[in-house]
Image 1 (tube, protein in one colour):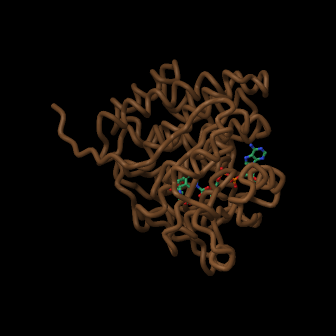
Image 2 (cartoon, protein in one colour):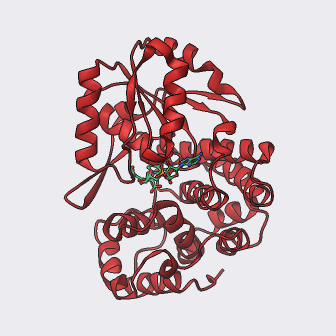
Amino acid sequence: MKNFVYNGQPSRVVFGAGSLQYLGREIEALGANKALVLSTPEQRASAEMIADLLGSRAAGVFDRAVMHVPIETAREAREIARKLGADCAVAIGGGSTTGLGKAIALDSGLPILAIPTTYAGSEMTPIYGITEAGIKKTGKDARVLPRTVIYDPELSLSLPVGMSITSGINAIAHAAEGLYAVDGNPIMDLMAKEGMAALGRALPAIKKVANDMTARSDALYGAWLCGTVLGNVGMALHHKLCHTLGGSFNLPHAETHTIVLPHALAYNAAAAPEAMLAIAGALNAKSAAQAVFGLAKDNGAPVALRDIGMKESDLDKACDIAMQNQYPNPRPLERAAIRQLLQDAFEGARPGS
Ligand SMILES: NC(=O)c1ccc[n+]([C@@H]2O[C@H](COP(=O)([O-])OP(=O)(O)OC[C@H]3O[C@@H](n4cnc5c(N)ncnc54)[C@H](O)[C@@H]3O)[C@@H](O)[C@H]2O)c1
Ligand SMILES: O=C(O)CCC(=O)CC(=O)O
């Protein structure tokens, strides 16, 4: 018998190859006149292309977005937005750039138009993260949810294949944990299954042919759905472990998600059997944990924390941090089992089913 609360979150999505052509129309619909364009240094050329498209509606380009939004960068961007008189922010890039837009919006209420070029899903969430004095704090605020999102798969063609696979599995992690969320609901379950299935099809196809437009479109569609799940229901052990490993040990975001997810699913398997069946079904496999491990390994993604910069001597500390301020999880957190999970992820062991 169903028993749930569902809260719709207002955001407008424009999806499709070539949909960047609607940028002007969408800025106008926001009632904005001066957009500050945000990007990482690596995507400066994309930001300039956006500024050119905006013409007189571009206030300027700020290209210093970096992972985990250092407070100093957030302050600098807020000040530039204020000096330029920007009345909206256009974020082109992945979660780091959207995150910078969110840090500006949190302070000023400036509306964000996001143009995602990875599959991280931040554009669909009211979640922000800011790093101060080496500690990453996350929170939720309706002001940071982008008002408009333009998903144009053509802009994801340049995402390197390796990053596409890990970013896609980052998206799958949102959907997988959404299926056993304490505050889950049937709408998010549908989105989670459809999103995972789209990514499960798309990632091997992208590995084969990086510019397969159908696969790129499927992947971005999956990212939208999985990101929506992240924005609507609470995450569990897997996200807690990744926040610990990323925030305290500076491990790269999407790769960490890719490595940890099969082990977190194996840990939760017996406590969340229906979710596991749904995940396995969406990925066309018998075991959820094995399916995700295979998706990573067969497509050349890293499967061991030791290969992305984790030190074995830090595993005890990581375990201690992960045991603090626990997120709700289907199986209670048992220290010895979590420590073993981290060891398995460190070594890249095949997870149990
Ligand atoms: N708040 C949320 O809801 C949420 C959700 C997911 C991730 N995040 C945050 O987002 C960050 C990670 O985001 P990410 O994994 O998207 O990585 P990212 O935004 O850091 O991007 C990684 C690199 O890829 C480049 N890149 C992005 N798209 C590209 C493209 N199409 N072509 C070529 N290069 C491209 C970027 O410029 C950057 O150099 C983390 O800080 C994470 O915590 C937040
Ligand atoms: O860094 C943030 O903004 C929060 C990240 C988050 O909750 C989603 C994730 O870990 O992929």
